[in-house]
Every structure is written in C-alpha cells, then in structure tokens.
Length: 205
Ligand SMILES: C[S@@+](CC[C@H](N)C(=O)[O-])C[C@H]1O[C@@H](n2cnc3c(N)ncnc32)[C@H](O)[C@@H]1O
Image 1: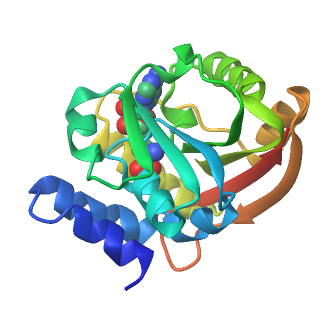
Image 2: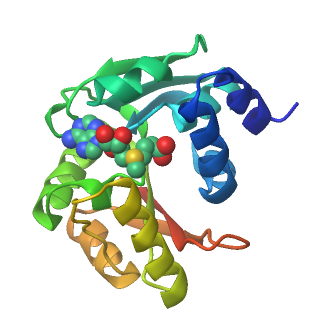
C-alpha cells in the first residue's frame, strides 16, 4: 500500500477531518514534496495543521525523526495518530527554540501569517535552526497560471473567512530567500492536473 493511502487510513472515521484529508490529498502536492525531504534526520513541519504531511513523512521513512508544530489545539488533537517516529507539539512557530534541524518544512503556512515582515522574520529564524547544509522546503501559492491563482484565493477565502493572505510571486520569493542567505536549489511547479497554483521551493543553508 502506498504511503499516501497509509496516511489517509490513519484518519478514518474522524468525520470532517476524514473528508478534508481526501480534499487535501487530491490537490496539495504532498507526494511530490515528500520526495524532496531528506530520508533521515531531524525534520520540523512548522504549522503542521492536522499532521497529514508530518505523518506521511514519518511513514515514508523510519529514519526520519519528525516533529510537527501547530498552535491550533483543535487541529492538533487529530495529529498524533501513533506513528512512532512522529511527534507533535503545541507551539507558536514564531517562538520556537529548537536547533540543528536537517530540514524545515513550511507547507501552505507562509501566506497565512500576519504580514510579509512576519514571514521574513520566521524564515530568518528557520535559517538559524537549520544545520549547515540543511534544507528549507516551502510550498506556496504562485500567481501563475492566473486562473489557478484566483481559484486558490477563492478557496482560501472560503476556508478562512475574514482573513487576509500574504502571497508572493516567484521572483519575490527568490529575492527573499537569497537576502536571508539561503541558496535556492530548485523550484518545482506542482499544479499539474489540479486547479490550484502550488509551487515548491527547495532551499539550502
Ligand atoms: C493551511 S494550514 C496548512 C497545514 C499543513 N501544513 C498542511 O499542509 O496540511 C496552515 C497552518 O498553519 C498554522 N499556523 C499559522 N500560524 C501559526 C503559528 N504562528 N504557529 C503555529 N501554527 C501556525 C495554522 O493554524 C494552520 O493549521
């Protein structure tokens, strides 16, 4: 059985969360992003939500020591599904004190922060928390193709009524990463076959 199916099975019989994981696994590039994460070492999934990606990472490689961080109690109560190499903590990702990570993941998190400045501060902290050579993996929403971007904004606005979102273009992301001394290794468009404009940035400290 594939790791995606194994992860989905963890969330059986959980009402709307069971429905939501199907929706997320249909459109979000979890499977592609998983292949970009180191197979071993200390992996932090910041803003892990219900823990879908953290659990997938743990199931896909037992050599990963995965920690999911989330400040929503409501979401976190579903995250720990007993995968042995995956832990979760209830914390604000802007105030974390961990160090020496092999990889830090921000999967659909940056545009949900409160400002572009807050994104920059978080990424600066992420840089300090990574080992030399560690990976930063950011999954975000691109402004191209335009119709997919507008569709994504509509979905975000429906799921997070009243919130404002802080998207950036690819050029703006590259400038930001480079300003913070990350090396941008790879940019992977991840919207094939889905109507949302996902893009994955792989950076190295
Ligand atoms: C769109 S969800 C993505 C969840 C998860 N990364 C995924 O892809 O399934 C964004 C998550 O970031 C969390 N988040 C936003 N700001 C945060 C903060 N300062 N500390 C901890 N979690 C935060 C939200 O509560 C939410 O669960």
